[in-house]
Image (cartoon, rainbow, N blue to C red; front, top):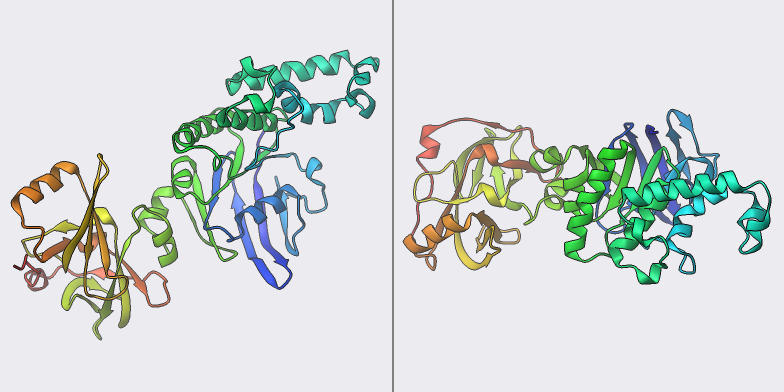
Length: 396
């Protein structure tokens, strides 16, 4: 069972602080949507409003086209997985997973410890609960752990118990609030794959909150980037990386961070970078910022469409990649980072004096252009042989 989720003009204030500023978002049935952004941007608050755990100050939440603002959490047919897992330490894994079904299927007297099993007429629902617990425990591969207590489990096993407890209810929507943040790096990578596979098997609607862009980019159907209580852009992961609508999106998505270089658009719109005209043409003149991903830069002895003087600062060899950190004198933070394959860096290191001033190049097609207010500039390229001929060479 799965459902659409509609969020319309959600407002939330805590005292004088406006945490959510008219957030609107439509989530398709069966979609894996991730809310990503820095701490304090409002993503967890929005998730808790969807779950009904806190009320909004304005706007509405709908599930499958029906408003749910008036419904308590248990009536919204959603399941929440918390960052802390929120397992009952005195209960076994079996009882932790079974708790939601016991609340739904057993009367209050039958849920009491010890004497609850003396209540007559509950054999059938108890067997139904046990079968459901065994089924989901097998799905998340913890069937052998049902008799243990949470203290006897690893972090990854506790995470699976929390997932199983959410799954056993067969909710219309899964809500997950940074469920992997307490795991070590290796286990996080493993659990990312597990969650993506779980979503594929269940076909359910997942709304996932994280501050980790890697989680957002590797698991999601779409990503909603939040900043300062607003959704800045919603797009599939590849589009968020390659076609950001705002300089904040470009900076947040991507590791290492995008290189941002100050430039100027002349009266004719031609963008001038490091004193040299480029094939980029902005919609209007003024100060602009040229964005280049680390993999877009290369060392260039030949004329390049975009060119820049730089000097080597340090090198990070990550095994699969080499990150080359360089400094420049254009302003901003004065730094750029290049990403090279190890073989390419080794070839350059053996043939070029890296301790001398260097020329970097990039193709205009790989550049992102932003206005002074951070919005993406509508730019076009003009292929101009005379401009390319003015590209910078290695200087010694």
